[in-house]
Image 1 (cartoon, rainbow, N blue to C red):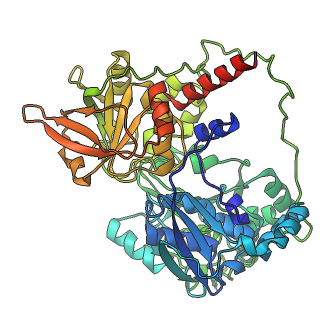
Image 2 (cartoon, rainbow, N blue to C red; image 1 turned 135 degrees about the vertical axis):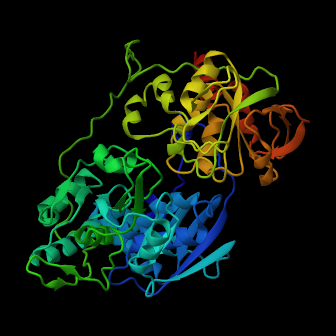
Length: 591
């Protein structure tokens, strides 16, 4: 995570990356800056994960939208580079444009341990310029005392619903009838699988094994990289985890992104899982809305797995050992960096040809997994009138709700097939049903993916309505490509997640926020909407008309964030079409 090494590293979607790779500018609105002042020092069961879980509690999943989060204060220097990476990684869950720590000795140590001593030496020479200025001003400041920060567990269904480990989550579970028995515990993903994370978790496991304890639920470990896997295997840490019943999975996203097959016997009823992942949206991990997912630190995951219960507090509670004795778990102890250095493990990189210009890409037209992309058509010069509302979402509508992962990921290279999941997880604001709506063409109730296909087959232009922070979560291009492929022209919302809003623009869709958020409530199931004054003009609101069935039209205003360059994307039909045009002109000029 570059941000834990003092970089302003802004998360982007793949389409933005393509722009930069082909020599075109990256667009982002000038952000605010939120300061998080850290004092004191973490100890015991509290970990860097608890810092970001607390920030998520304070700011919520959209409180960081349009802002850089800068961590500063003497407490910041006490957190390891990989601990900082955990915090910055989860900054995406609060909508942050970027999260950053100032350069310090922790970063220098990590650079030297990862064969980058020359970078550390160069940074050391200008260290004063890689830290916040004294008296720096912030648009908002949060203060966290690390010495008093207690272990947290956040969820279910959203990473900002925070509870104190033990009594805090127990109270919420009782009030909401959440199952206390844990059906699975998971450690890993990009967020929490550093050497320090695993050594802390393994220390708890090692102590537990010495007392005869075993995990009382499935315990799955996902190493964050081949280097981490090889290093923790060499140092005996995997063996420590396996000694209490853990299963080690491949070095991959795995269950964090839904690559996890579970028994229907478990998922057909409400069940609780705990993980050290960053996201816990409904259906994300195993495709089941019955699974209640909570996120916490790796050490706490181990403790909860040993107890088998969500309400266990490792700081005060005990576990009964096979011999009948009551065991209080020892607080985790971790090593920031491996004493014997990192083991790179197996070499898995395959370099591309130096010159690929003569390579022809051939795709079997009958392939279910690959399909060559056809350019989206350019804007026809007309306003969008009387568009049916394909979907109006109630509450959270993440990129997982829009384009589910899990088994669908095998179709990532086939836009038509993966569009079979479009809005499958969205909650219909009119009926409360998940993934179903009313087809305006023939009046039938169908799944949202089927309605989208029907509209697309009939060349019907349509719109959709989102709620707050529409499109939060993974920067998943398919969540913008699929609606465009099926004929979407406009997506309305009370507010958008930053990357998804940009992704929609990249695909030639107009993302509009209601000037008055209450206008969301004006849109009925059988209404159509017209959007006038296309193309969108930078810094000018858009005139929209809600056509009520059997009633008077309602005129409202909507806002947008299009820049002049982004308006060109819209006119061309997509940003990729603009890139294609520029590359073609450049090639012609060279000839």
